[in-house]
Image (cartoon, rainbow, N blue to C red):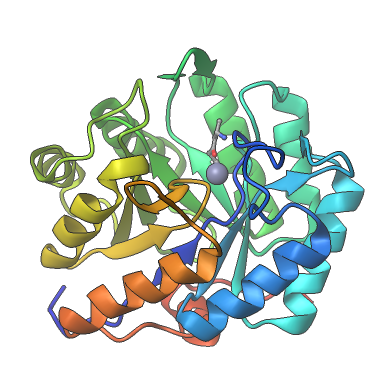
Length: 279
Ligand code: KMH
Ligand code: ZN
């Protein structure tokens, strides 16, 4: 990868963990998620990582809600739409598998179990394999979420045992600084990249909370792509709450331009990831 590589900016606008009550700016309704997607596309995002909320703003994997949100985003943006199969730590494996039926062209696929704050985010090997094989059958392009060094090793094992994903390209995302996962430091990113070797065709990184800037700068300097959004960071700078996800995308796009990386649009991101837009 060279410094001229265009930059994929993923926005993860909602997540499952933060409450609307404490963070009223969090987009939770289908209309808010759509408006966020539009503003973030305008600001330079190429892909949206979608978590769903019910009418009470609680995390859900409800299929009807998933179809509604995916449909709106597909109709009114060109963003690659990636559904979260992680959901929340309370979701069942069955529900996390079933959300693949909602019509998204891409999905997240977490490569291992980890402590997640005071909870546990469960991803046993059998579930990873079930999810992976379902993406291959349903022609959905997975993005591999790597929270720890062991997850990188597990990705290598998955590809070696079960072949390449649908689309043929492997895109990994380092989610750093989760309490329970790898720290959001350049050293940790380098260690993870060294372990990844040439197993992935491309990668992005995000740092949770205060790690957002150091991880973004380290990722850009190493030729990686960026994920930002209120799923990962709720303050723009110390004491300054994020008012809109597009602020985070704009900042990522500015950092990218500084590194001579222009943001990819949705269609370019779709080609880059070899994602097939579902009919
Ligand atoms: N909410 C976390 C427990 C994903 O989207 O695939 C899991 C998560 C990963 O956010
Ligand atoms: Zn997520």
